[in-house]
Amino acid sequence: MKQKQRVRSGLGVLLAAAMVCPTALYAHHSTAEYDSATFVEAQGEVTKVLWQNPHVRLEISTQRFDGVAEVWQLEGQSPGDLDRARIPRNLIAIGDHVTFAGNPSTRRERRMYVTNVLLEDRTEIVLRANAQPRWSPDRYLSHLQAAVDPARAAADHGEGIFRVWLPTASKTPDWARDPPLTAEARARWQAFDAIRDDPVIDCTPPGMPQVITRSGRYAIRFVMQGGDIVLKNEAAADRAPTPLGWSTGRWDGASLVVTTTGIDWPYFQLYGLEGVPQSAAMTLVERFTPSADGAELTYDISATDPRTFTRTVTADGYRTFRWQPGFEFLPQDCVLDASRADEP
Image (tube, rainbow, N blue to C red):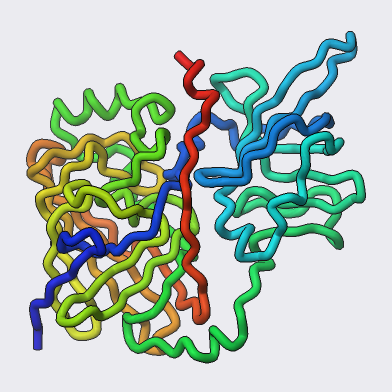
């Protein structure tokens, strides 16, 4: 039997989210400017450390062959997973001499999405979610080593969909390579610049659907509060409700189907698809389906917006979440990168 149920956010709106704070942006801070096919490695002295959301950020002073100092600005992954792995925030200190490697910017000199940092004692820190140790395979620290409190995990039984879920995979639909856009939407999409135009770059918490479809290891959790289902998202903050829209939910068997309208957020985003404009006419339908054993949650999404798309687009199986018993939601206090003030 299908039942309608309110899906409420902690903002007092109906969509899901007593959402904790936000935006370790990988969707971020967009990584669009970094060349993932190129690796640069260098050595230098740490002159600045900012271990805060949206990313771990470092400044490293290096020296050219002619003795002239050059400063590299590095950004890595969100510190949340590193904190859960109990990697000390003071592990990298000003004055340390380090070796670092990562993907250089295609737009700004001496700017890097850092993947690996090697300390003088040969301890290696992996600072990107999909990176592997580069120099010290037997002595490295990574978010993959995050430990869960056994007592907390044992007490966290969950029931059906009412658990903490961590994304493990995303599948970009084929149509995202050439989305079916109206002429107006296509022109705006083609003019989109992720560094200049993405609101979350400046610590604006993401709206729908970006808050859940964006890249990054941001956990979600369903809880019951009175007669409402509340979807909490680790990557979003309490704020005015309109970016998340107005949502209602219904049960379809074991699946929770959520329909959201009234969204005041400029872009529709999926992994591998950024900068598609969306209008106030957007309607999103999300389906959260737990597996038979309750260990995984499959996320489907469809979008209808006559000002943006020439047809309804769907992404079935877009994201897979895995139940994380004992997982600890952490506040994500986004700090704007002051160096952006000098950018054109």
